[in-house]
Image 1 (cartoon, rainbow, N blue to C red):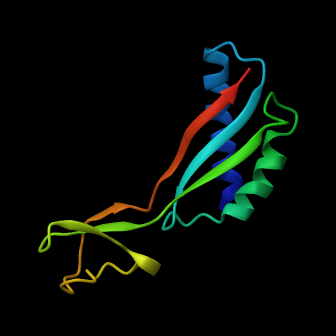
Image 2 (image 1 turned 135 degrees about the vertical axis):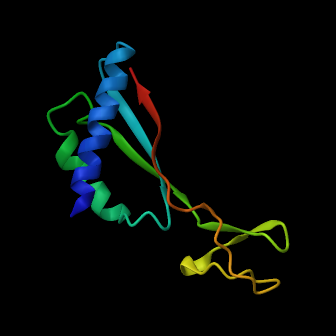
Length: 113
């Protein structure tokens, strides 16, 4: 389960940022996760509870902000949803090689006190 390793990295980053801002407690963490990031949100939730235990984030809430995959069609000059990872433009049928969104895995925000 690579989600455990991902969450350990999130913990390290969150604790570092909290320390830089003099926070005594992390109330909430928001992660932005793309639909093609290869991460299982429920596995992340389980890993979050384990990894954050015994830290200033032990009572924190985890919010997951999903990011749908989106490609850009060079022929039509506009973005389109890449449903199920398919990068074929629904209007002209051109295969796009320009994936604009969907692979994100970011610590988007934190609430601290």
